[in-house]
Length: 165
Image (cartoon, rainbow, N blue to C red; front, side, top):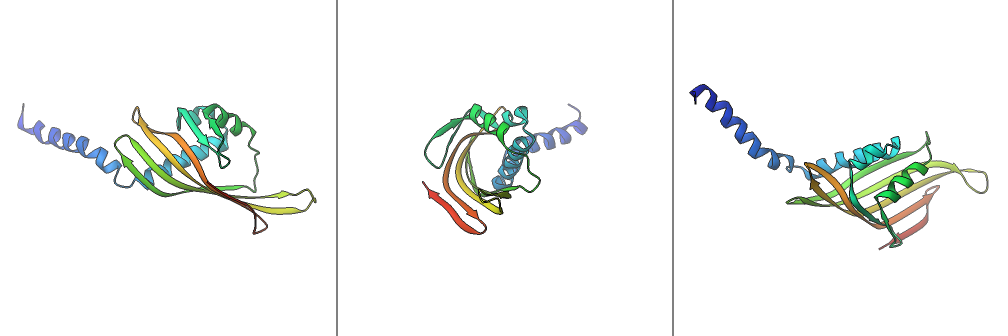
């Protein structure tokens, strides 16, 4: 092999070996981006984008202990109301990658204004914490399991509902 080709090949090989380590340097940022992909798919009601984030065997255990699968998540996405006054934000609290699996603690917060039974507009706020499991499949991180741990709902700044597992 000509000498002038050796250096580029060595650099390429070094980068290829370092890439997995570099990708895992900040797991919180990696999963923050995946939750952004999930939120985007849900807001756009795009089943193809959703399936690029959720594993086919995805399960979610809600705050009441009931389990839901990927099909239920897709169906729920279709029922989500479109609202200009609605905000949703996901924040990764911690993320640990072990091989091809990752444990992520995340918090979803949201808010919207809606009319109550009394006809008056109320500010509704939601805070939901969950423990999630992601798996690296086919080079992509897919959400496999989500277990809701704590839910707080506020109406006009006052706690309306609080539940923990």
